[in-house]
Image (tube, rainbow, N blue to C red):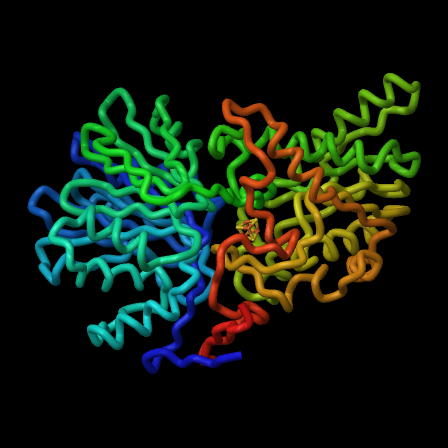
Length: 505
Ligand code: SF4
């Protein structure tokens, strides 16, 4: 294990599981529309919000802050300070550090030629690139973000044309998972890594508003009907009147993140043609095929909100079976109340914060569980925080038995492609044995959808495209990582700690 201390500052390659957007508004009022898009993508990052606009004189206006879109951009005077027809923005779920994007650099060092970058994903070789930029150009990094490593390689590019410089950087330099929205010289450059790990879409509505976002459900907020998915290994150059150029910049090898379908994405989004709600519904139906009819189920309860859709799928399969075989109808009840004023606790960085917020966020309604054999459905079991707390609340409320059905396989591996997980915090990886995990969460039984079942759910969901399981990354469930990465993710670094490169790969 090689320890690296880069440039005298804490450098973490920790990437960004984020929502990113770009807007061009011909009426010159891009900021309110940008705020709507970002709010729709809040599921992808509740920890920070950032937006950068360019006005008609080419001046930049920036607003960034911790918290939800409403808190950072909600005030009218803030929105009106983001003047101009162009906005690039981000909602942030950082794996580490404090940097809120978009980042700003300058082409060939010229202040009148800003480069604005919003990134969803994680550069797998950020530590090496940071060291190279410091050694070659004595580049002074302004942040600890992995995203910033792209700026020196663009700023000092040999090419005189920005597009060519960008293509050279993505082909020869950066590796990993990235969906990028880059604004430069009046155009957006929308680009995805050659595996297409994170989603990205482009569209234009009847009023001529050009919108780019991580998920298509955000574009529909602005009545964009014609959505174009940016493909893996694709660069779309987007001008104010629409897509100007489409370039396939590398050999395509799709490895779309399967966890987007399990947890991250909005259920009303389509990811490359696969509707997230339909895929989740299939996860439930296939889970029924795997666990079969259950005589020990008095009531079925979904965990909101990403556990809802697969639990509905499971319940429909249960009803079909009951009708066909003359069994009792198992009721589906909203037995766990979710406070909508607490965000997604999975994305909080500190375990203590997650646990406290979880108690505020979820409460059990005793009337639905008292004296019953309760089955609870949830999308995933990562750290065990939610599952353990809810099991305890169920027992306090008088449940006779508590059984869990998880609509994804045990999470045995961290994600080096933008999701904030470290190996030592994954309960299935730590305890290794499913019965030990069941014991840890205090449940009477614990069932997982199999990896084959999960692949079936995403490939069998109705889609205009035929997808195979080989086109998905499922590394956090299989331990097979399709893209090399250099950082060690055994345990989460604490502020002030050096970072490590895992030299075992
Ligand atoms: Fe998605 Fe898991 Fe792959 Fe990360 S490791 S990209 S969360 S499937």
